[in-house]
Length: 313
Image (cartoon, rainbow, N blue to C red; front, side):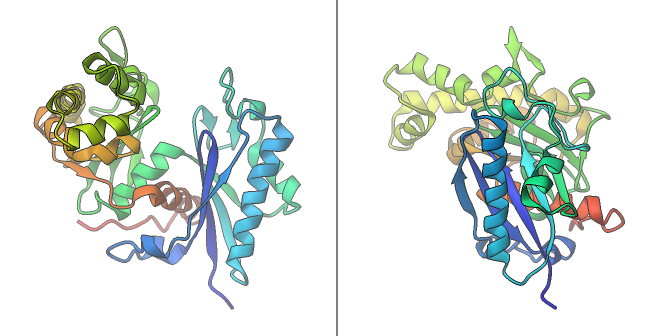
């Protein structure tokens, strides 16, 4: 009989990435993790559409990956889904945000099983940032370490505090009121999400040069020798490091792993971040496959609770 496979989906603001993950890679991970063997697909989704349209699109992605699996049985489907979401029960709590708002209050897993006509299909959900960061901590850049803080830097600030491959929601240094997430933490006169995100960095770049079109544009200019723009990236990284320093002092991470679109400019801001936080900063080793791997790892954790994913030290 063919070996089983996990279907993984990374649900984004305008599209869904998907791919097939071999559960044996998660139980007994090769080093390095075989990301080149993951054939990821990206499917546009009308995230602001009515519930039947959104569910139909998600079901179509699952059908696509089932076809790609061929004769291999599907062990389960793992989602990396944005918050707010009741991940244990599979209920979407996104409201007053046009993306996926039509799914508010819905048992998404049950709705997808009904639409697919597969009542026994196992579907699990995980926060998308958590999925990517835990994957990096267990299988990627953080693999040599027990204690890791992971940040996804992009449209918003995603974060997870990880010990031995498990995201922490409380404990020394962990912001327990927000369930272990940094984005709502106060910073200056706003929140960390307002400053350490694309909009926050772009605002700083525009203060230096109003003609900067995007973070990627700014990074290209800085790399090409624009010292004013390079200084903005370094100052932003130092500020992020200062913000992290208090959490790091109590949590005692061995590394900070950086993912997301802004992390493509790693060399421009990470050294300043590391110096200010007093913790080594590492770039992602898994890239865009991280959230898919973490979503699939969530399936293994849920279905095989006695078989925690290993981590090398």
